Length: 521
Image (cartoon, rainbow, N blue to C red):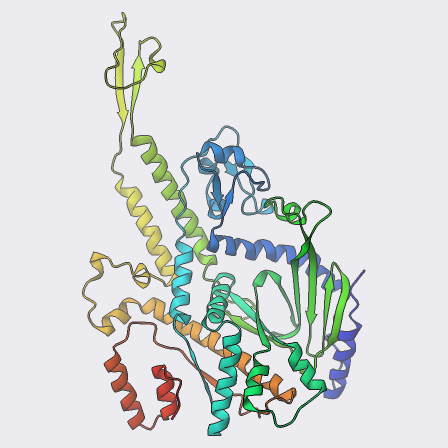
């Protein structure tokens, strides 16, 4: 069955007629089929690789991993392989990689034996450190509504919505997805209670009831591999339709013996899986399972309930800049050199012997009390091996780490690694200068993520307004996001700064919010 999209095109024509425009942004089934069948597999490979490099998962070799590399893995003495081995050369892994085989796939190469493989995931701790700087502490949402009571109530509603969806964990998940993929989308999904209140509105709701209903609004983070946005042809910043395509596991056993195994080669998972396609617009939505329409309905809000957030702004692209992608080549080089060093140490850490002219020399152990005898006057035993210093190798590895510091903007100091060459950082100014790269990048992210959180807050308040749960005006929905200082703070300096701001006329509520106090006087 093909996609039946009349509900979207009819709604689009009605909206265009209201604006006095021609209906140009109709959704075609052929184009949607291309997105799902051709575009989606491509972004699975593109974004899947970024996530694998960040998480660096381990796969046991007794399980099937695509084009089998089990024999090569066993030669190396380890019963597992890691995702970042994808970037290592065949002379180390003994496996030739290709994009079509996936991160864990590969083809064994001739008689090349697997060497010592060393993976040091420098990507993950840098991403996590950047997330800690951005959302390591709770943020404050300050309403800019003119009325004091309304302002307090709006802040309480928004805090309740975000707390119901994970609180600080929600923001940290948002930052991780954005850092890995370059962007993250958030879909605002009102619960059943909200829709029921539209059809049966109740006047004069108490504030406690409003808070309870607000908890029913879900904030769903959409990861990049399942997002297929349809943008305006003339404005890449305007989203017309939002399409999601993903595979959902059912609580059933598949009769065909494992769809996931055939698709990804990651073990014999026999769980039944369906291909889900969700289409959302400002006026309607649909859900397909294996291209069969299972549900559809109208959108009563009048806007597309999706907020798009770029990790770091990138002009003329829907996707933002990923923190992982530019680090992949340097990570591969670092892992290659670490593996080469481990192989060299393995070869040179033990004394080896070359026997000449001694019969059955290979069958006799080299150990105390063992003697050899021969009638060959030219016989000899030569010793070789032993670890040797290689300054150029260590320098190259150090330079690779410094390159990752520059590209990511996150230095080991951010993760608490103090080196002797750091110097004296007793003053806050010196510490900020040392972390200038991290702080500058954090400020850029504060803008993009802060604007995204503001749009989410506006959508939540507008939904509650249109559902006749809590009435607000456009001006009431304006909020401000206050990020705490990520660096260690001197409490006395903060209090003195807050006192000076109050004397300058800064509202007391704002000062208390910056100090982290929720009570407003």
